Image 1 (cartoon, rainbow, N blue to C red):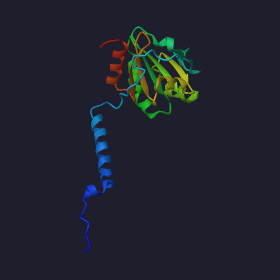
Image 2: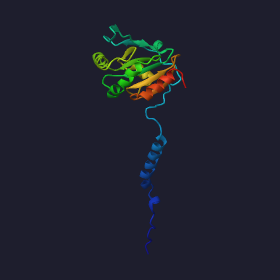
Image 3: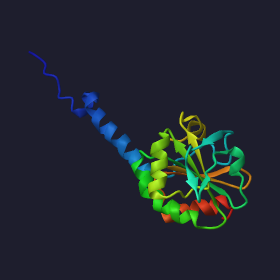
Image 4: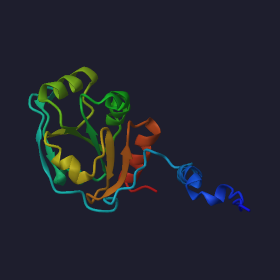
Length: 191
């Protein structure tokens, strides 16, 4: 008499449970991220002094007939706080946020600095010439070294820096008016 093996069911073949386990892990990850702002990426630099750097000016860029200066970490210390905006002419979202920066430049009390990331001189000058220059100073980071020191993931990114030169907030992606107001508030030290 031959013995027939009893049916084993789904738990007899554990590899059949792999797709279910993968799905549950992925669902758990998505659930953990619900309600979080994707533009808020934690940075180990929050609360730290800004990295040391010195950036040359964007050659040929003028404002009111005067050359626009480059800047260094010393320029980040401003009584009303500083916003450091990382931009490039080839960046489509940078064009999207530019009207917000132009409006922000009209406000008193906040210093807006532009870090031109891995861009061609002529392209950057044409970008600011065509859309307007909202920045008090523009520094060129052609190698991307300073951007790397700040932990930049991509452009645009904006850093709020307090009067002591500490990074107090970081925003990834194009700014809205509400985002800009929040960064200005944090840079000025207002809760």
